[in-house]
Length: 455
Image (tube, rainbow, N blue to C red):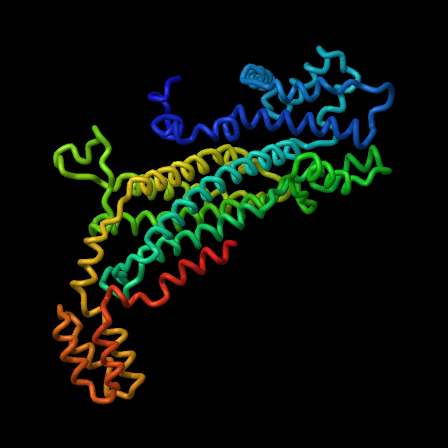
């Protein structure tokens, strides 16, 4: 199938942006991870638990099954599944066939020992989620890095803020970038420190078959050892037949928050571009509009916003649905879990397009400076605060009468300041020297503080 015939944009239009996910979340990826779990469990039974008696066995074949696993092997398993009508059982038969052909028939019945299907599935998905989480975190860290570069470059550039879309207390361009860097960084740190849980405890989570056959083994300790030491996962003991997916939900909710923050950023950048605060670099040959030749649209930020919306909707559903199961097990999770790759795919597209948008931005310092100069009423806030401090009558109301709904200039403000009765002359001089461009508070220091906290 060519990409032009793909049903979803993930495998069609955006296949170049989602290629890293193919070997993780595709049907091939799921099957490969199942094979890995089955083989690792078999090795653990033989090497750690010493359940297989007799001569020393050459287990190199087991490693080869994992190392050499390819698409042809996955297709063979799919053909077996046509007979079994059971995907995990097909993996078991595939491995047994490999053992028979490799002269290891003696251990064939130890494949899938004491396991229920979800012991294999939940571990496979845990390994997949771990890889997806690491990939998403890596991209988020790159995004943070680019935001931080802008924060440093524009730390001292004054800019008019907007609250409710209206002119408000000035800030600096760098401080606004730091705001977003800090927010995303909280989620990145959470994801980096968040372990992924898995279970291998039998049909209803109580090690029933394990204990019945081998009561002398500490099965709780063995399962913890297998999951943590051999697979790098966090063991979870308290389950039904299925993993309750707590850690999966936490990872997805963190990605939902990350996506929401990025939509916030996308919309702000869209707005700043429309105000002329940023220019977008022209790429030779590109068209902005089919009918208006002059246009350079903020399409990368719009694309990011749209795909992050899709990621949020899917991840929210997955995070909530996958914590629910009727009694000890129902199969509604099985079909839903297969869509994890799509959720991660939309997320990756969103981040990559936001990065692309950032890479094309140039600051329009003149437009930003002009906006500040043309909005002298921004000084109403500091002036009325000073009047309160020095005991002037009705400071807020007097500034409100002067500035609300009016465009005023430096001259009008100076006349107002000169007429103040209780403000000392030295402080009046300070008020006269203040401009919207210099009224930025501790914005620059806050940028420095952000970077100091990272050290």
